[in-house]
Length: 446
Image: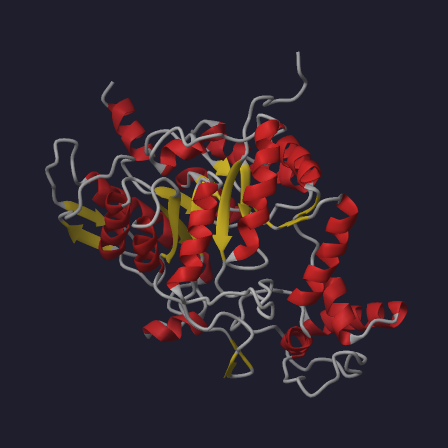
């Protein structure tokens, strides 16, 4: 008998088309537009050719800034996610379509209707990546700056999801809409649904959160959790075990929440060539301008006048915390402590600004030949460290080509990847049960 817990498990793959980030290589001649439909079309059709479960679209509600100016090393705007995915539904047949949508700055009746519309128009392939925001910087775009206390983020999220589910369930099995009234602490909804159910019943619920509150929210409400634990096996297994324990504690089967960590692949003919390629990729990701920008984020000032091949600033930052206009990279960490640690490492190892920033960048993902990486992915999934992976290409739109042409066949040779889509809906691709509210209703009537 095999001592591998899930010897027949197969790898599920999704592609994460990022929004704001500095890990996409912009300077490469093959880098495509971040607003041109052709870029998105090529990525999603490549993923579907590779039998991926889903195309996962990131989205932000405000352009990132630094020192009061737009940060021009990132994506500068992007079409609305649901609009973009509706267009992609017309040029695909099977792959799931995941829209990142914020619960803080949306209304349940409106968002539930738009997600249900995508689900129906795509034939049951829609999903919702549920995200929360409480910072005043984003809120200023909605004249709600700081209106939601940090501790209420997941309370609002839970109430929002429950309202959306009630709206989706308001269209009955016999195709009759019924009025829905859902009142809670942060919202009060009264609406009659206008969109029928899709073949999968509800859009699939994704959630990306790593805090204890985020994990508990996923265990209670989500069907897929998108995690940051996609590099180290032991770390990923600890995370997966924790999520499964929380899911059981929430009264659900432990496999009710699929775990798809975000990760990056760097592939080449041999492991040695892949390691060389990975070093080159990291150097391309951290350009001289990016290195100075990341340094300036810690110091809280414009350092673009410095030589990226020169030493770090000798003075300490004067700010007390790193601002959130470029996300929350070091919430609760003192910039002075970070600066001093960086300077000590740079002096000890003889590193320039850019070399230090590259060295500080977290190692992530899988590097090797297709055969080596396929073996490792199968090990993860069959030992319960994840159910698959959500791939962030370091180059778009061509960054999935070698995954589909080289890695997918290697996984198929190992019996660790599908050879055809066996269903038509995203819920079927992921092996998910019926929507949780449908199961609870069925249990109550027995």
